[in-house]
View 1 (tube, rainbow over the protein chains, first blue to last red):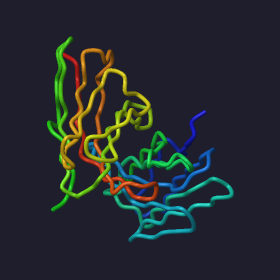
View 2 (view 1 turned 135 degrees about the horizontal axis):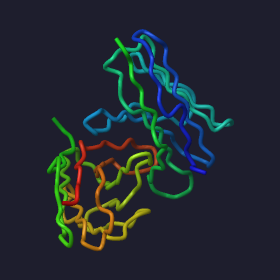
View 3 (view 1 turned 90 degrees about the horizontal axis):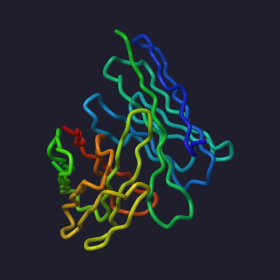
Length: 111
Length: 113
Protein backbone atom coordinates (compact mmCIF):
# COMPACT_ATOMS: atom_id res chain seq x y z
CA UNK A 1 0.00 0.00 0.00
CA UNK A 2 1.35 3.43 -0.94
CA UNK A 3 2.04 5.84 1.88
CA UNK A 4 0.21 8.54 -0.10
CA UNK A 5 -3.08 7.76 -1.84
CA UNK A 6 -4.99 10.13 -4.09
CA UNK A 7 -8.56 10.00 -5.38
CA UNK A 8 -9.92 10.07 -7.91
CA UNK A 9 -7.24 8.98 -10.39
CA UNK A 10 -9.06 10.73 -13.23
CA UNK A 11 -11.68 13.47 -13.10
CA UNK A 12 -13.56 15.10 -15.98
CA UNK A 13 -15.84 18.05 -15.31
CA UNK A 14 -17.62 20.88 -17.09
CA UNK A 15 -16.25 24.40 -17.00
CA UNK A 16 -17.50 26.22 -13.92
CA UNK A 17 -17.89 23.15 -11.71
CA UNK A 18 -16.45 22.94 -8.18
CA UNK A 19 -13.63 20.41 -8.08
CA UNK A 20 -12.37 18.37 -5.13
CA UNK A 21 -9.28 16.15 -5.18
CA UNK A 22 -8.46 14.07 -2.11
CA UNK A 23 -5.20 12.89 -0.57
CA UNK A 24 -4.78 10.44 2.32
CA UNK A 25 -1.52 9.45 3.94
CA UNK A 26 -0.61 6.76 6.43
CA UNK A 27 2.50 8.14 8.13
CA UNK A 28 3.46 11.04 10.36
CA UNK A 29 4.31 14.10 8.32
CA UNK A 30 5.84 17.51 8.87
CA UNK A 31 4.23 19.04 5.76
CA UNK A 32 1.97 18.23 2.83
CA UNK A 33 2.43 19.65 -0.66
CA UNK A 34 0.07 20.08 -3.59
CA UNK A 35 1.75 20.25 -6.99
CA UNK A 36 0.42 20.86 -10.50
CA UNK A 37 1.97 19.11 -13.50
CA UNK A 38 1.23 20.67 -16.88
CA UNK A 39 0.82 18.60 -20.07
CA UNK A 40 4.39 19.45 -21.07
CA UNK A 41 5.68 17.88 -17.85
CA UNK A 42 6.80 20.88 -15.81
CA UNK A 43 5.69 20.94 -12.17
CA UNK A 44 4.57 23.95 -10.15
CA UNK A 45 4.25 23.96 -6.38
CA UNK A 46 0.75 25.17 -5.43
CA UNK A 47 0.62 24.84 -1.65
CA UNK A 48 2.59 23.61 1.33
CA UNK A 49 0.49 22.89 4.44
CA UNK A 50 1.16 21.70 7.94
CA UNK A 51 -2.25 22.62 9.39
CA UNK A 52 -5.52 24.32 8.57
CA UNK A 53 -6.32 25.86 5.23
CA UNK A 54 -4.67 27.94 2.52
CA UNK A 55 -6.22 29.85 -0.39
CA UNK A 56 -4.69 31.22 -3.56
CA UNK A 57 -7.06 32.64 -6.13
CA UNK A 58 -9.57 29.92 -7.04
CA UNK A 59 -7.58 27.19 -5.31
CA UNK A 60 -8.12 26.13 -1.70
CA UNK A 61 -6.17 23.45 0.17
CA UNK A 62 -7.15 21.99 3.52
CA UNK A 63 -5.54 19.47 5.80
CA UNK A 64 -6.86 17.45 8.76
CA UNK A 65 -3.85 16.16 10.67
CA UNK A 66 -5.88 13.86 12.96
CA UNK A 67 -7.57 12.15 10.02
CA UNK A 68 -4.39 12.19 7.88
CA UNK A 69 -6.31 13.71 4.98
CA UNK A 70 -6.02 16.72 2.69
CA UNK A 71 -8.24 18.13 -0.04
CA UNK A 72 -7.56 20.45 -2.95
CA UNK A 73 -10.55 22.42 -4.17
CA UNK A 74 -10.89 24.45 -7.36
CA UNK A 75 -13.78 26.89 -7.61
CA UNK A 76 -15.24 28.04 -10.94
CA UNK A 77 -13.07 25.55 -12.85
CA UNK A 78 -11.66 26.55 -16.23
CA UNK A 79 -10.13 24.53 -19.09
CA UNK A 80 -6.70 25.98 -18.21
CA UNK A 81 -6.98 24.09 -14.88
CA UNK A 82 -6.62 20.84 -16.83
CA UNK A 83 -3.48 19.20 -15.48
CA UNK A 84 -2.26 16.43 -13.20
CA UNK A 85 -2.46 17.36 -9.53
CA UNK A 86 0.01 15.62 -7.25
CA UNK A 87 -0.03 15.31 -3.48
CA UNK A 88 3.30 14.82 -1.69
CA UNK A 89 4.31 14.62 1.96
CA UNK A 90 7.48 15.34 3.91
CA UNK A 91 7.86 12.51 6.41
CA UNK A 92 8.34 13.53 10.03
CA UNK A 93 11.56 12.72 11.83
CA UNK A 94 13.82 12.04 8.88
CA UNK A 95 15.85 15.19 9.39
CA UNK A 96 15.67 16.11 5.73
CA UNK A 97 13.17 17.26 3.18
CA UNK A 98 12.63 14.04 1.25
CA UNK A 99 9.19 14.00 -0.41
CA UNK A 100 6.94 10.97 -0.87
CA UNK A 101 4.53 11.40 -3.78
CA UNK A 102 1.07 10.19 -4.68
CA UNK A 103 0.42 8.98 -8.23
CA UNK A 104 -1.56 12.07 -9.19
CA UNK A 105 -5.09 12.99 -10.27
CA UNK A 106 -5.59 13.82 -13.94
CA UNK A 107 -8.15 16.65 -14.21
CA UNK A 108 -9.81 17.55 -17.49
CA UNK A 109 -12.14 20.55 -17.67
CA UNK A 110 -14.41 20.61 -20.72
CA UNK A 111 -15.48 24.02 -22.09
CA UNK B 1 13.73 35.60 -13.72
CA UNK B 2 14.93 32.99 -11.25
CA UNK B 3 14.25 29.37 -11.96
CA UNK B 4 15.51 25.90 -12.77
CA UNK B 5 16.67 24.99 -16.26
CA UNK B 6 16.86 21.40 -17.42
CA UNK B 7 18.40 20.44 -20.71
CA UNK B 8 17.87 18.90 -23.11
CA UNK B 9 14.07 18.51 -23.16
CA UNK B 10 14.33 15.26 -25.15
CA UNK B 11 17.29 12.88 -25.11
CA UNK B 12 17.93 9.62 -26.90
CA UNK B 13 20.43 7.02 -25.78
CA UNK B 14 21.86 4.03 -27.52
CA UNK B 15 22.34 0.81 -25.63
CA UNK B 16 25.56 0.85 -23.60
CA UNK B 17 25.95 4.63 -23.61
CA UNK B 18 26.16 6.96 -20.66
CA UNK B 19 24.20 10.21 -20.93
CA UNK B 20 24.24 13.30 -18.74
CA UNK B 21 21.20 15.41 -17.95
CA UNK B 22 21.81 19.03 -17.04
CA UNK B 23 20.14 20.94 -14.18
CA UNK B 24 20.99 24.54 -13.38
CA UNK B 25 19.28 26.86 -10.85
CA UNK B 26 19.70 30.57 -10.14
CA UNK B 27 17.46 30.64 -7.06
CA UNK B 28 20.40 30.51 -4.64
CA UNK B 29 18.99 27.25 -3.27
CA UNK B 30 21.22 25.01 -1.18
CA UNK B 31 19.40 21.72 -1.84
CA UNK B 32 18.89 20.03 -5.20
CA UNK B 33 17.11 16.81 -6.17
CA UNK B 34 16.66 14.40 -9.07
CA UNK B 35 13.41 12.49 -9.54
CA UNK B 36 12.27 9.88 -12.00
CA UNK B 37 8.66 9.68 -13.20
CA UNK B 38 7.18 6.56 -14.82
CA UNK B 39 3.59 6.20 -16.07
CA UNK B 40 1.16 5.33 -13.28
CA UNK B 41 3.76 5.82 -10.55
CA UNK B 42 4.57 8.66 -8.23
CA UNK B 43 7.85 10.53 -8.58
CA UNK B 44 10.75 8.63 -7.07
CA UNK B 45 13.91 10.18 -5.65
CA UNK B 46 17.17 9.24 -7.36
CA UNK B 47 19.73 11.47 -5.62
CA UNK B 48 19.72 14.63 -3.57
CA UNK B 49 22.29 17.14 -2.41
CA UNK B 50 21.91 19.42 0.59
CA UNK B 51 25.18 21.28 0.08
CA UNK B 52 27.99 21.68 -2.43
CA UNK B 53 30.36 18.70 -2.70
CA UNK B 54 27.93 16.43 -0.85
CA UNK B 55 25.08 14.21 -2.06
CA UNK B 56 23.07 11.22 -0.88
CA UNK B 57 21.38 8.30 -2.61
CA UNK B 58 17.62 8.33 -2.84
CA UNK B 59 15.31 5.36 -3.29
CA UNK B 60 16.43 4.31 -6.80
CA UNK B 61 20.08 5.38 -7.15
CA UNK B 62 21.37 2.22 -8.85
CA UNK B 63 22.61 2.94 -12.37
CA UNK B 64 22.83 6.70 -11.80
CA UNK B 65 25.58 9.08 -10.66
CA UNK B 66 25.66 12.78 -9.77
CA UNK B 67 28.09 15.55 -8.87
CA UNK B 68 27.66 18.84 -7.03
CA UNK B 69 30.75 20.92 -7.70
CA UNK B 70 28.84 24.21 -7.84
CA UNK B 71 25.83 25.42 -5.90
CA UNK B 72 23.98 26.18 -9.13
CA UNK B 73 24.51 22.87 -10.90
CA UNK B 74 23.53 19.24 -10.21
CA UNK B 75 24.05 17.08 -13.32
CA UNK B 76 22.72 13.52 -13.44
CA UNK B 77 24.48 10.78 -15.41
CA UNK B 78 22.44 7.80 -16.50
CA UNK B 79 24.97 5.01 -16.87
CA UNK B 80 24.83 1.87 -18.98
CA UNK B 81 24.18 -0.01 -15.73
CA UNK B 82 20.66 1.46 -15.58
CA UNK B 83 18.72 -1.29 -17.33
CA UNK B 84 15.46 0.59 -17.82
CA UNK B 85 16.39 4.25 -18.31
CA UNK B 86 13.39 5.30 -20.42
CA UNK B 87 11.50 7.77 -18.20
CA UNK B 88 10.81 11.42 -17.51
CA UNK B 89 13.45 13.02 -15.27
CA UNK B 90 12.73 16.04 -13.09
CA UNK B 91 15.19 18.21 -11.21
CA UNK B 92 14.14 20.31 -8.22
CA UNK B 93 15.72 22.67 -5.71
CA UNK B 94 14.86 24.27 -2.38
CA UNK B 95 16.38 26.27 0.47
CA UNK B 96 16.50 23.01 2.42
CA UNK B 97 14.67 21.88 5.55
CA UNK B 98 11.46 19.91 5.90
CA UNK B 99 9.12 22.88 5.45
CA UNK B 100 10.53 24.50 2.34
CA UNK B 101 8.74 24.10 -1.00
CA UNK B 102 10.65 22.51 -3.84
CA UNK B 103 10.85 24.27 -7.19
CA UNK B 104 10.87 22.02 -10.26
CA UNK B 105 12.32 22.24 -13.74
CA UNK B 106 10.44 21.34 -16.91
CA UNK B 107 11.98 17.88 -17.13
CA UNK B 108 13.96 15.79 -19.60
CA UNK B 109 12.39 12.85 -21.42
CA UNK B 110 14.94 10.10 -22.02
CA UNK B 111 14.31 7.36 -24.56
CA UNK B 112 16.36 4.36 -25.69
CA UNK B 113 17.06 3.96 -29.40
